[in-house]
Amino acid sequence: MNSLDHNYDALVIGGGPAGLAAAVSATQAEARVAIVDDNPGPGGQIWRGEHRRPNSHEAAEWLDRARVKHVEFIGGARVYDQPEKGLLLAETFDGALELRYRKLILATGAREIFLPFPGWTLPGVTGAGGLQALVKSGLPIEGKKVVVAGAGPLLLAVAAYLRKRGADVALIAEQAPLKSLLSFGFGLWRWPGKIIQAINLKRELAGVPHVAGCWPVSANGEERLQSVKFRRGRKTWDVVCDYLACGFHLAPNVELAVFLGCEAPDGVVLVDEFQQTTIPDVYCAGEATGIGGLELSLVEGRIAGLAAADRREEARALFAERRKIRQFADLLNRTFALREELKSLPRPDTVVCRCEDVSFEQLEKQTTWRAAKLHTRCGMGPCQGRICGAAVEFLLAWRPESARPPVFPVKVGSLIRDVKPIAGKGQ
Amino acid sequence: MPETITLLINGRSVTVPEGVMVSTAVALSGATVFRRSVTGGRRAPLCGMGICFECRVTIDGRPHARSCQILCRDGMDVRTDE
Image 1 (cartoon, rainbow over the protein chains, first blue to last red):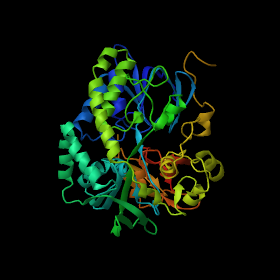
Image 2: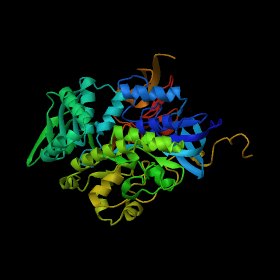
Image 3: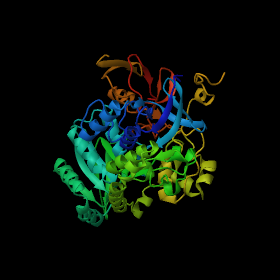
Image 4: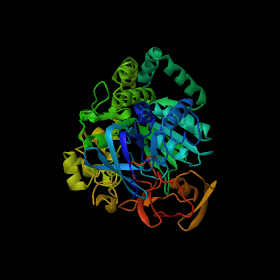
């Protein structure tokens, strides 16, 4: 119920690298800039917890710049509605907030893609980035046996992180075939910094088996996860473990942008060269405009922030850098494209929609996402299809539909505008 | 600010370092189930970042709180669907 003067020249949604860079770049003489994030602290996923326990020099620099430039951070607040242009509502644990803005920068990041397979709902099966986030939030992992599986470069980063925190990483299983990984490696010469990162990761993971063309076919256990069955070619085998950290690359979080009316064909928010969306004064930067990683998020964030502050020439000076990193992003997304065999992972009785417990066979009887929602309630639960949507799109080639308010499920109290009017307005 | 926080998980007292999420306290309490699915399945956090809603618990009588995104506070009363 806190609605003290939340009135901003630039409001940034999302406090990860793109949001931090955008907010810092948007600050200028007397500009009031704030970041809103649903996590209690800044950093997003990749820099989660950096404000409490610094690890990354780059994160520390951006967090410091945000402090020096007086960027306000509003944590634990999730935007769920825009009753009128320039006014957003956000829900917190203690009530709702009214946030007014002149320029809006969306830096809503990405989530992991999860594919259903038998046993994937067992406690102990988490996302890859998911387990990293849980450990960064305090989950003890020391001495636990972990297998990391799925797709994408995140797997290596997660495995290295977990190992550093004392986990026994038994296997890293990448679904992409070896030849894709090799050509990816050879293509890296254009980005020397990436080669150094890759070599460092490999060193940190010395002794951990990293298998290409390999994926989990089932997770097994009674009360919780006990083992995972893997497949590579025709061979299958079981690995005993405490956790399966499994994610199949990333998908942009476009729901808020779509809700605000921004065009997002092909699941990425459409932006112009200044990172402006199809809605004037609404910008978007980072993973929501297409999966590209940390460096692309930073440069897009800087461009968006500068453009929002009408520093267009300074923004233009960053275009060449952005172009180069985007080429890397394209290579990355081609390399880790999901293979056809993964479409046969779910068995008929495998749950696809975890909120409503809708099985794969129930979905196969439907013809569209809309029909599936109406007849099975798939995607109608609290996550609103954020988890099953990407899976269904991959398995059955259905596209999700437009986002409607609330963007996230909220308490009824928030829906009836349980917020105090801003001084000078309303009653 | 205290360096440790003590809260109740299913009636059991658990002490955690300051700054950790409720999901961590639940795991430390020994509970493996956070919520029961609509058909009774055992569920625990999947995404770790507030998207999947599998980490839902009841905090101070308030149901459907996402334990992955809420910091532990002294004296919180947390219930899972154990």
